[in-house]
Image (cartoon, rainbow, N blue to C red; front, side, top):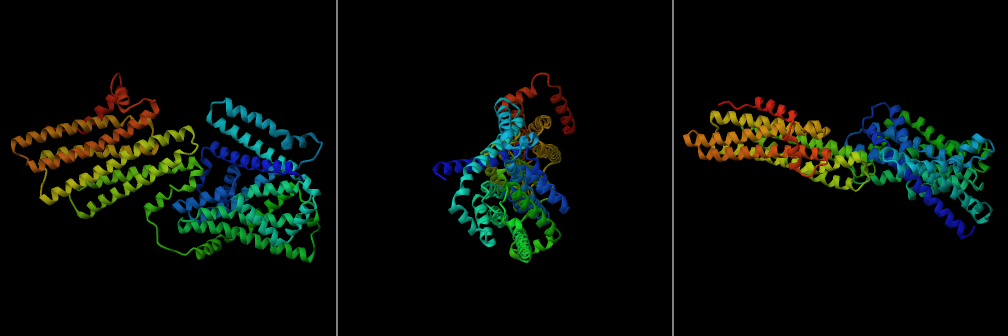
Length: 587
């Protein structure tokens, strides 16, 4: 084997690893993140969990990626440890699909239908179809399908290059002599574990083993323990990912490790005990690519069948390893959705951002309700709650804003880019509404401390104005869940009514001051209160406009508002009249 063969092998390995990653990432994008999102809505049925774990892993082509996602789900509190166990087992089964695809390179036959199955026959056709879809088709989904075809063709080309480059090794005595070192089960186990831990992909390491088996110099006796070690080595990615995560997330990573270790120990103990009693002749024969795939599948399916009834014991073992510590708060769990582990699946990360954004909006709307309630009956407990909710909203803004910036650096489809732009525009508006709710609480406290109260007319005006603003803020919170333009158009008519009420309230208050029916001191408080409510409404309008800007591709708030309010906009006028009658100020 000369230097050119070494270069060809390295190049083949590079193409193989790139093709696997590229195919998996495009498969994930083509699914629109739905495969990953299905994991979150998992039922408690263990068999469904196994099937789902296998299916998702077969799609994204990486058991490590699936397990890392599961660790993230458990860390954020949206998945129980018992659910994670079944998915982890299924992920080990799903990853074997890659080895079966790679086994197609070993097909040797003159039969036409078998030759058509050989990658060297259909990979070029897939590559040609893929490049047409990728370069000349505008539809985003079809581009991802083209990327899948291209990734598969590159993967198979890399596999063929590796296989061709290592074939001369069969005639190299040093190579065959080195293989005898791994014929000992423990040495082979260690070699497989180290190789997989280094490249962090059991599918890739099995593919490398299959390429080496193409030389005909690797017997099953050497290959089998290496495969066992590869299943243990793939746990490294999840273990690294769990560092710094919650205790349950670390337990999920340990379940992955214990599942593979226990399965390997049981398999090797039974297999080599039986081999000692009656030696298996096939261990001395040369391993083939299909044989490697069969061993890989049989082990993972067998280990799952063996350990699935004992998932409770695996959980207890993981809980014993990672002891209970301090309990996490609800907010810590919810912000766990913004986990860096999900950044590798941008569609899923965006779904989590949407959930957190909506929760932040609902928190702000509830805070406003409590703050307005303090105007009727002030108590320190609710006042403290309003201040605490403001701090929570500030935390949400900080964490979500930082996470959105990280997601923006990823490869997003058009829909997710649209949502990300809206959220980046709206997050500060939601936080400012929270600040104004805290301002209302301060007004209520000043009234309490100075023993101030509204006049009867002033009370009615504030009740109408605050009621309209509360409805507006709740509508905006709902808007942040779906972000539908038709709902966004309903915000501005109510905002116009709020402006009318604010102007009328201020004018009426000046009139009461002139008549002496209201004090100047109370006037300062009322003016501040009206400003807080009016500005909260302004930020609701800003949120709605941000959504409409994205839809209309218009630049600037004024352009959107001008299009909405002027001209023959019957919908706007009807909504305005409806809200004006609903919040009509008598007298």
